[in-house]
Length: 315
Image (tube, rainbow, N blue to C red; front, side, top):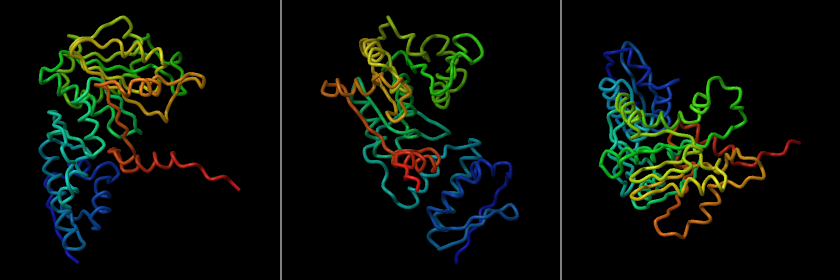
Protein backbone atom coordinates (compact mmCIF):
# COMPACT_ATOMS: atom_id res chain seq x y z
CA UNK A 1 0.00 0.00 0.00
CA UNK A 2 1.40 3.37 -1.05
CA UNK A 3 0.37 6.82 0.16
CA UNK A 4 0.75 10.35 -1.18
CA UNK A 5 -0.37 13.73 0.17
CA UNK A 6 -1.16 17.07 -1.44
CA UNK A 7 -1.23 20.19 0.72
CA UNK A 8 -4.22 22.46 0.17
CA UNK A 9 -3.53 26.10 0.99
CA UNK A 10 -7.03 27.44 0.25
CA UNK A 11 -9.78 25.25 1.72
CA UNK A 12 -12.41 27.39 -0.06
CA UNK A 13 -11.22 25.91 -3.36
CA UNK A 14 -12.06 22.34 -2.35
CA UNK A 15 -15.67 22.34 -3.68
CA UNK A 16 -14.40 23.31 -7.15
CA UNK A 17 -11.55 20.79 -6.94
CA UNK A 18 -13.69 17.88 -5.74
CA UNK A 19 -16.70 18.71 -7.94
CA UNK A 20 -20.41 18.71 -7.16
CA UNK A 21 -21.11 15.86 -4.72
CA UNK A 22 -17.41 14.87 -5.03
CA UNK A 23 -18.01 14.00 -8.69
CA UNK A 24 -14.36 14.52 -9.73
CA UNK A 25 -13.01 12.47 -6.81
CA UNK A 26 -15.33 9.57 -7.61
CA UNK A 27 -14.19 9.59 -11.23
CA UNK A 28 -10.51 9.50 -10.22
CA UNK A 29 -11.14 6.75 -7.64
CA UNK A 30 -13.00 4.58 -10.14
CA UNK A 31 -10.51 5.04 -12.99
CA UNK A 32 -7.31 4.61 -10.95
CA UNK A 33 -8.45 2.28 -8.14
CA UNK A 34 -7.29 4.50 -5.28
CA UNK A 35 -8.86 5.87 -2.11
CA UNK A 36 -8.86 9.65 -1.60
CA UNK A 37 -9.61 11.42 1.66
CA UNK A 38 -9.16 14.85 3.24
CA UNK A 39 -7.43 15.27 6.59
CA UNK A 40 -5.64 18.19 8.28
CA UNK A 41 -5.61 20.41 5.17
CA UNK A 42 -4.14 17.58 3.12
CA UNK A 43 -5.53 15.37 0.39
CA UNK A 44 -4.44 11.79 1.11
CA UNK A 45 -4.22 9.25 -1.68
CA UNK A 46 -3.73 5.54 -0.99
CA UNK A 47 -3.50 2.47 -3.20
CA UNK A 48 -1.15 0.70 -5.58
CA UNK A 49 2.01 2.62 -6.46
CA UNK A 50 1.07 3.38 -10.08
CA UNK A 51 -2.47 4.50 -9.25
CA UNK A 52 -1.30 6.72 -6.41
CA UNK A 53 1.30 8.41 -8.63
CA UNK A 54 -1.24 8.99 -11.40
CA UNK A 55 -3.94 10.29 -9.03
CA UNK A 56 -1.42 12.64 -7.39
CA UNK A 57 -0.47 14.07 -10.80
CA UNK A 58 -4.11 14.56 -11.81
CA UNK A 59 -5.14 16.22 -8.54
CA UNK A 60 -2.04 18.44 -8.54
CA UNK A 61 -2.84 19.68 -12.05
CA UNK A 62 -6.52 20.21 -11.20
CA UNK A 63 -5.55 22.12 -8.06
CA UNK A 64 -3.37 24.43 -10.19
CA UNK A 65 -6.32 25.08 -12.51
CA UNK A 66 -8.56 25.96 -9.56
CA UNK A 67 -5.97 28.33 -8.11
CA UNK A 68 -5.46 29.95 -11.50
CA UNK A 69 -9.03 30.13 -12.83
CA UNK A 70 -11.33 29.31 -9.92
CA UNK A 71 -12.88 26.35 -11.74
CA UNK A 72 -12.47 23.90 -14.62
CA UNK A 73 -14.68 21.85 -16.94
CA UNK A 74 -15.50 18.24 -15.96
CA UNK A 75 -13.96 17.18 -19.27
CA UNK A 76 -10.58 18.31 -17.90
CA UNK A 77 -10.66 15.42 -15.41
CA UNK A 78 -11.14 12.91 -18.23
CA UNK A 79 -8.42 14.56 -20.31
CA UNK A 80 -5.86 14.41 -17.49
CA UNK A 81 -6.79 10.83 -16.62
CA UNK A 82 -6.24 9.80 -20.25
CA UNK A 83 -2.92 11.64 -20.24
CA UNK A 84 -1.49 10.01 -17.08
CA UNK A 85 -2.70 6.56 -18.19
CA UNK A 86 -0.93 6.95 -21.51
CA UNK A 87 -4.10 6.63 -23.55
CA UNK A 88 -3.78 7.93 -27.13
CA UNK A 89 -5.27 11.32 -27.87
CA UNK A 90 -7.93 11.77 -30.51
CA UNK A 91 -6.09 11.33 -33.84
CA UNK A 92 -5.95 14.22 -36.29
CA UNK A 93 -8.13 16.32 -34.00
CA UNK A 94 -8.86 19.69 -35.67
CA UNK A 95 -7.92 22.91 -33.89
CA UNK A 96 -10.85 24.99 -32.67
CA UNK A 97 -8.95 28.11 -31.63
CA UNK A 98 -11.25 28.64 -28.64
CA UNK A 99 -10.29 28.65 -24.96
CA UNK A 100 -12.62 27.65 -22.12
CA UNK A 101 -11.53 27.72 -18.49
CA UNK A 102 -7.95 28.55 -19.43
CA UNK A 103 -7.48 25.62 -21.81
CA UNK A 104 -7.81 25.22 -25.55
CA UNK A 105 -11.03 23.49 -26.48
CA UNK A 106 -10.64 20.28 -28.50
CA UNK A 107 -12.76 17.25 -29.40
CA UNK A 108 -12.71 14.60 -26.66
CA UNK A 109 -13.71 11.55 -28.73
CA UNK A 110 -13.20 10.15 -32.21
CA UNK A 111 -16.82 10.95 -33.03
CA UNK A 112 -16.43 14.56 -31.96
CA UNK A 113 -13.24 14.86 -34.01
CA UNK A 114 -15.11 13.57 -37.09
CA UNK A 115 -17.82 16.13 -36.42
CA UNK A 116 -15.45 19.10 -36.14
CA UNK A 117 -13.54 17.92 -39.22
CA UNK A 118 -16.79 17.69 -41.17
CA UNK A 119 -17.63 21.28 -40.19
CA UNK A 120 -14.21 22.42 -41.42
CA UNK A 121 -14.51 20.61 -44.73
CA UNK A 122 -18.17 21.12 -45.71
CA UNK A 123 -20.67 23.94 -46.21
CA UNK A 124 -23.61 22.06 -44.69
CA UNK A 125 -23.32 19.53 -41.86
CA UNK A 126 -26.05 17.48 -40.23
CA UNK A 127 -25.26 16.03 -36.82
CA UNK A 128 -27.51 13.72 -34.83
CA UNK A 129 -26.85 12.23 -31.42
CA UNK A 130 -28.02 11.97 -27.82
CA UNK A 131 -27.95 14.63 -25.13
CA UNK A 132 -24.49 15.61 -23.91
CA UNK A 133 -22.45 14.45 -26.91
CA UNK A 134 -21.33 17.97 -27.88
CA UNK A 135 -23.54 18.60 -30.93
CA UNK A 136 -24.35 22.20 -30.05
CA UNK A 137 -21.25 23.03 -28.04
CA UNK A 138 -18.74 22.05 -30.73
CA UNK A 139 -20.78 23.78 -33.44
CA UNK A 140 -20.77 27.01 -31.42
CA UNK A 141 -17.03 26.65 -30.77
CA UNK A 142 -16.43 26.20 -34.51
CA UNK A 143 -18.52 29.31 -35.19
CA UNK A 144 -16.60 31.41 -32.66
CA UNK A 145 -13.31 30.19 -34.14
CA UNK A 146 -14.45 31.05 -37.69
CA UNK A 147 -15.53 34.53 -36.57
CA UNK A 148 -12.23 35.23 -34.84
CA UNK A 149 -10.25 34.07 -37.87
CA UNK A 150 -12.26 36.31 -40.20
CA UNK A 151 -13.79 33.41 -42.12
CA UNK A 152 -17.31 34.75 -41.43
CA UNK A 153 -18.72 38.10 -40.38
CA UNK A 154 -21.65 36.90 -38.33
CA UNK A 155 -22.85 34.03 -36.13
CA UNK A 156 -26.55 33.19 -36.26
CA UNK A 157 -27.87 30.72 -33.65
CA UNK A 158 -31.35 29.38 -34.34
CA UNK A 159 -33.84 27.16 -32.52
CA UNK A 160 -37.45 26.17 -33.20
CA UNK A 161 -39.78 27.24 -30.37
CA UNK A 162 -41.50 23.87 -30.05
CA UNK A 163 -43.15 22.91 -26.79
CA UNK A 164 -41.87 19.74 -25.10
CA UNK A 165 -44.95 19.05 -23.03
CA UNK A 166 -45.08 22.59 -21.65
CA UNK A 167 -47.30 25.45 -22.79
CA UNK A 168 -45.80 28.68 -24.11
CA UNK A 169 -49.04 30.52 -23.38
CA UNK A 170 -48.65 30.12 -19.64
CA UNK A 171 -45.15 31.59 -19.54
CA UNK A 172 -45.00 35.21 -18.29
CA UNK A 173 -44.03 38.21 -20.43
CA UNK A 174 -44.26 39.22 -24.07
CA UNK A 175 -43.37 37.01 -27.05
CA UNK A 176 -39.63 37.61 -26.70
CA UNK A 177 -39.76 36.70 -23.01
CA UNK A 178 -41.68 33.53 -23.85
CA UNK A 179 -39.16 32.30 -26.44
CA UNK A 180 -36.03 33.23 -24.46
CA UNK A 181 -36.01 29.91 -22.53
CA UNK A 182 -35.78 28.06 -25.86
CA UNK A 183 -32.79 30.14 -26.97
CA UNK A 184 -30.97 30.15 -23.62
CA UNK A 185 -28.85 26.98 -24.20
CA UNK A 186 -27.31 28.54 -27.31
CA UNK A 187 -26.45 31.76 -25.50
CA UNK A 188 -25.04 29.82 -22.54
CA UNK A 189 -22.65 27.98 -24.87
CA UNK A 190 -21.37 31.13 -26.54
CA UNK A 191 -20.91 32.94 -23.22
CA UNK A 192 -18.53 30.19 -22.10
CA UNK A 193 -16.25 31.01 -25.02
CA UNK A 194 -16.44 34.81 -25.06
CA UNK A 195 -16.49 37.31 -22.22
CA UNK A 196 -19.77 39.00 -21.29
CA UNK A 197 -18.89 42.47 -22.63
CA UNK A 198 -17.84 41.07 -26.00
CA UNK A 199 -21.00 38.99 -26.34
CA UNK A 200 -23.10 42.02 -25.41
CA UNK A 201 -21.28 44.22 -27.93
CA UNK A 202 -21.54 41.65 -30.72
CA UNK A 203 -25.21 41.06 -29.95
CA UNK A 204 -25.98 44.79 -30.11
CA UNK A 205 -24.13 45.00 -33.44
CA UNK A 206 -25.93 41.91 -34.83
CA UNK A 207 -22.60 40.15 -35.23
CA UNK A 208 -24.13 37.48 -33.00
CA UNK A 209 -27.82 36.72 -33.36
CA UNK A 210 -29.78 34.24 -31.26
CA UNK A 211 -33.23 33.95 -32.81
CA UNK A 212 -36.20 31.59 -33.13
CA UNK A 213 -36.58 29.74 -36.42
CA UNK A 214 -39.69 31.68 -37.46
CA UNK A 215 -37.63 34.90 -37.62
CA UNK A 216 -35.46 33.46 -40.43
CA UNK A 217 -38.14 33.70 -43.12
CA UNK A 218 -37.29 36.07 -45.99
CA UNK A 219 -33.62 36.52 -45.07
CA UNK A 220 -30.44 35.78 -47.01
CA UNK A 221 -27.33 35.40 -44.86
CA UNK A 222 -23.96 35.95 -46.51
CA UNK A 223 -20.60 35.27 -44.83
CA UNK A 224 -22.41 33.80 -41.84
CA UNK A 225 -21.98 30.74 -39.63
CA UNK A 226 -25.53 29.53 -39.01
CA UNK A 227 -26.43 26.86 -36.43
CA UNK A 228 -29.84 25.26 -36.18
CA UNK A 229 -30.19 23.46 -32.85
CA UNK A 230 -32.95 20.98 -31.83
CA UNK A 231 -33.59 20.52 -35.55
CA UNK A 232 -35.58 17.33 -34.98
CA UNK A 233 -38.45 19.65 -34.04
CA UNK A 234 -38.65 21.36 -37.44
CA UNK A 235 -41.21 20.40 -40.05
CA UNK A 236 -40.17 19.65 -43.63
CA UNK A 237 -41.38 23.09 -44.76
CA UNK A 238 -39.51 24.84 -41.96
CA UNK A 239 -36.29 23.00 -42.76
CA UNK A 240 -36.55 23.91 -46.45
CA UNK A 241 -37.15 27.55 -45.48
CA UNK A 242 -34.15 27.52 -43.14
CA UNK A 243 -31.66 25.85 -45.50
CA UNK A 244 -32.53 28.22 -48.34
CA UNK A 245 -31.48 31.22 -46.21
CA UNK A 246 -27.86 30.27 -46.94
CA UNK A 247 -25.96 33.00 -48.76
CA UNK A 248 -22.49 33.28 -50.27
CA UNK A 249 -19.48 32.19 -48.16
CA UNK A 250 -21.76 30.85 -45.42
CA UNK A 251 -21.73 27.62 -43.47
CA UNK A 252 -24.65 25.82 -41.83
CA UNK A 253 -24.61 23.23 -39.04
CA UNK A 254 -27.87 21.45 -38.25
CA UNK A 255 -28.00 19.36 -35.08
CA UNK A 256 -30.63 17.38 -33.23
CA UNK A 257 -31.62 14.23 -31.41
CA UNK A 258 -34.06 12.17 -33.49
CA UNK A 259 -35.10 10.20 -30.38
CA UNK A 260 -36.60 13.36 -28.85
CA UNK A 261 -39.06 14.63 -31.45
CA UNK A 262 -41.81 16.86 -29.96
CA UNK A 263 -43.78 17.37 -33.19
CA UNK A 264 -47.35 16.11 -33.60
CA UNK A 265 -47.48 12.42 -34.52
CA UNK A 266 -48.56 13.06 -38.12
CA UNK A 267 -45.74 15.58 -38.78
CA UNK A 268 -42.49 14.34 -40.36
CA UNK A 269 -39.30 15.73 -38.82
CA UNK A 270 -37.54 18.14 -41.16
CA UNK A 271 -34.19 16.87 -39.87
CA UNK A 272 -34.88 13.25 -40.85
CA UNK A 273 -36.35 14.35 -44.18
CA UNK A 274 -33.46 16.65 -45.14
CA UNK A 275 -30.78 14.09 -44.28
CA UNK A 276 -32.49 11.59 -46.58
CA UNK A 277 -32.86 14.12 -49.42
CA UNK A 278 -29.48 15.84 -49.34
CA UNK A 279 -26.89 13.25 -48.32
CA UNK A 280 -25.54 12.74 -51.88
CA UNK A 281 -24.92 16.44 -52.55
CA UNK A 282 -21.27 17.53 -52.60
CA UNK A 283 -20.45 19.80 -49.67
CA UNK A 284 -23.07 18.19 -47.45
CA UNK A 285 -21.96 15.88 -44.62
CA UNK A 286 -23.76 13.80 -42.03
CA UNK A 287 -22.23 12.84 -38.66
CA UNK A 288 -23.86 10.55 -36.13
CA UNK A 289 -22.66 10.72 -32.52
CA UNK A 290 -23.47 8.06 -29.93
CA UNK A 291 -23.49 7.51 -26.18
CA UNK A 292 -19.72 6.94 -26.45
CA UNK A 293 -19.34 10.64 -27.32
CA UNK A 294 -21.16 11.95 -24.24
CA UNK A 295 -18.90 14.20 -22.18
CA UNK A 296 -21.31 15.44 -19.50
CA UNK A 297 -21.62 13.82 -16.08
CA UNK A 298 -20.71 10.10 -16.23
CA UNK A 299 -24.34 9.18 -15.43
CA UNK A 300 -25.70 10.86 -18.58
CA UNK A 301 -24.28 8.15 -20.83
CA UNK A 302 -25.80 5.44 -18.64
CA UNK A 303 -29.15 7.26 -18.53
CA UNK A 304 -29.22 7.53 -22.34
CA UNK A 305 -28.42 3.83 -22.71
CA UNK A 306 -31.10 2.89 -20.17
CA UNK A 307 -33.74 4.77 -22.15
CA UNK A 308 -32.61 3.14 -25.40
CA UNK A 309 -33.15 -0.34 -23.95
CA UNK A 310 -36.56 -1.91 -24.30
CA UNK A 311 -38.28 -2.06 -20.89
CA UNK A 312 -38.88 -5.52 -19.52
CA UNK A 313 -42.46 -6.66 -19.37
CA UNK A 314 -43.92 -6.82 -15.89
CA UNK A 315 -45.06 -10.20 -14.76
